[in-house]
Image 1 (cartoon, one colour):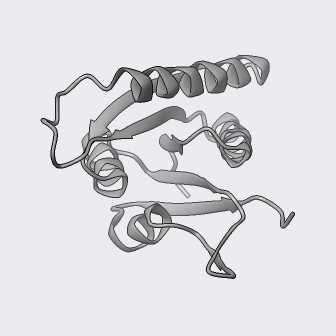
Image 2: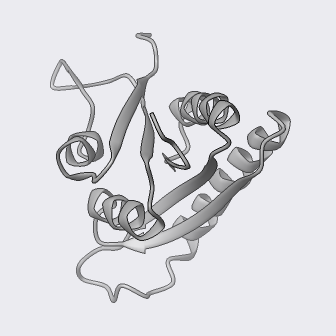
Image 3: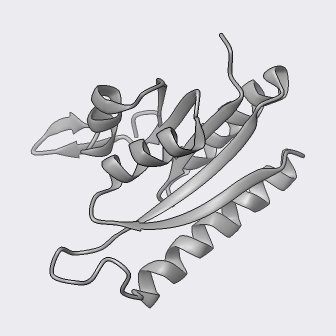
Length: 141
C-alpha cells in the first residue's frame, strides 16, 4: 500500500492519541508525512470566517498537545486548524486538497440511546473520502 500523506483528524479525546500513534508507526515505515487537523464547526447563523475565540483556543490546545505527543514519539507532524460548517465535508476537502492517501480517525467509545455510536464524522468519511479510511476505536469502558 502506497502511503505518502496521512491525515489524522483530532477532537481532543484519548482516541486521538491512539490514531496519532498508529499514524506515526505507519508513517515511519513508509516515510510518510502526517497532517493533523482540528475542525471548528461554525453555526450557519454566523459568517464562516467569524472568530470564535473559545473554540479556536480549544482547537489550538488540542493541536499543541498532539504536537507534543508527536515530539515524544520523535516524529514531525504538520498541524492545521480549520473552520467549516461541518467536520466531515471539511476533512474530505482537506484530503483532496492535500493529496492524502490515508485518513486515520480515532473514535471514542460512546453510546447514544443505549447503542454504540461512531458519531457523524466516521460514516461520512467512510462514504465520501477519496482515499483509504482507518478507524481506531478506543476500548469499551
